[in-house]
Image (cartoon, rainbow, N blue to C red; front, side, top):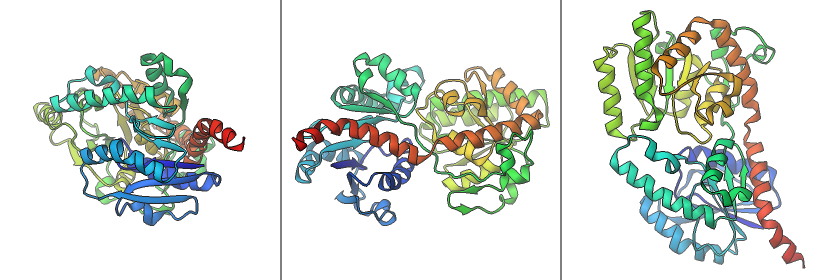
Length: 404
């Protein structure tokens, strides 16, 4: 059967990482179906992936705007699906192609439209989220099957749309990092020396020792600056920790600015609390550099209150860094006992958990050991198998009909 994947829009929320890892896994584990990828001209995957069952179709220019790509998908793309005799369409986003001539499966990987009203966002972000919510509602009704990337996503979707319960399957994302942390991490050692924890491998190659400025202890957090990422509460909690003990390591923020007003609030609060000399804003940094920082950090702190299946936590476990995370689902679902949890709206609780990680080397070692083992379950091969099962379930009636 011919399965189409559209990579034209909705590639935020880890979409680039998602496809870069998913497509090779699909090519490896499913030799029965053909996968037709509809991409902008010059898409990087076209040069990186060469498999007989993967076909690329360049259908829009690389500089085409988001609005133009959306218009293409909804108005012109259905004719492309007919022309290529596509049997099934998979869109790895909340959005269906409403005029598609074939059955389709959508993935819910963005929870922002479901809960954006709970946060104080810039008005333009609220407008965008409202539009995405209206499209998500229609898409859930239109889809023949729905992939939820965590149980938390499934539960929210089914709570909002009980009639969709029979259409939803949970298929977790994988992690793009292959961790080769010392085997003692999987043998229950109480603590792993920092120099061993840093000597892991990322992807297919070894990364050298950390940069010189990464040698000193520091807390690290990574997320785009938007209200639900909750960096403001982290700053408040960190300030309480500093007030209680002046020996606290600095706090480093990695991530781009999604909401300028919120970012300005965070920076202003840092200054007001007298933390300018302790807090660093690194901006949006390359993924390999982020992994390097994760492997060097004293602990990774993740205060987000709205996620679907956060790649960042999967990467942190694979990098062998102790984790302190929000107790809001799906964070405990993803990390289980590989993290310490705090109430994200309570700065005092954030400070308490950070202090415990700072003081307890044995605890940090146990978290690293558990995380290194747990992340092994989140493979892209397993993701591909789960997705193929969902796709084949929709295709089965068409296969039966064609045989008859």
